[in-house]
Structure formats: C-alpha cells, structure tokens
Length: 173
Image (cartoon, rainbow, N blue to C red):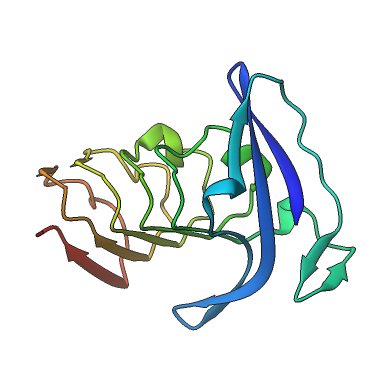
C-alpha cells in the first residue's frame, strides 16, 4: 500500500492504493485500486502529496509515481464525492470506475482536471442528477457505463459534443 495525501481545501484526504494493471475495454490501465472502507480517510491535517514506490503484485515499480496512474478503481467504499485533489495527484488518469459506493454526485468541477479521461464507469451509487455541462472538459471521453437507479434527472445535452464509441446507460431501479 502507498499512502497518498491529497489537499482538499483545508482538509486532506489519505488514499491507500493497491496498484495493479487493470483491463477495461481491451486496454490495460496502471491503476490505483481502492476496495475497502478504510482505503480513504479525511483528516484535519493539511496538504502534501507523498509519492513513494508503487507495488504491483508484490513487485516494486520504482519508475512509477502518482503521475503514471492511468486508472482509478473504487469499489465497496464510502465515497460520497470525488475529492478536488484527485486531478492534481493523478494528472494522467484515463479511466475512472466507481461502483457500489456512496457517491452522491459527480459535477463538472469534479471531472474538470481529467483532460485525458477516456473511460467512465459509475455503477450502483447514489447519483441523482447528470447536469448539462458534466463532460464539457472531458473531450477525450469515448466510453461511458452508468447503472444508477437513483438518477431522477438527465439533462438532454449531457453527452453533447462527445465522440462516444461505447455507451451503456440504465437509470431504472
């Protein structure tokens, strides 16, 4: 595990990633995997992104750092929102997968820094609304999977200006 600290306003978020290569839509992503309730913690201490050795299958990859992470996989966690420091700590993120978490909302501001994002999978969270300009800063987004039974409003232009190659949507309970 690597402890990564992300600045979020006056709070900091500690992330304990397991690193592995994950395949999504036939592409391998070097990924930060968070799959338990204790992997994300917020505290009153401030700032500092710490970068150390990343491990994949118990092998240390000394040439890898947070900037090399291409995928973020959060499963079975208590993530109510995407912390604002994620984009700065993982600038080359191409895939975000959040399932069976407590994610209540995803806004344009949450996704703004992820300019390389190509894959987004949000499944079984607590999202209610998909706003009009949600993907305005994610022009490379080509694959979207959403199975969100709590969605009550989807703006008709939420996917406007995207070149989607694969999309799967299910908003029914």
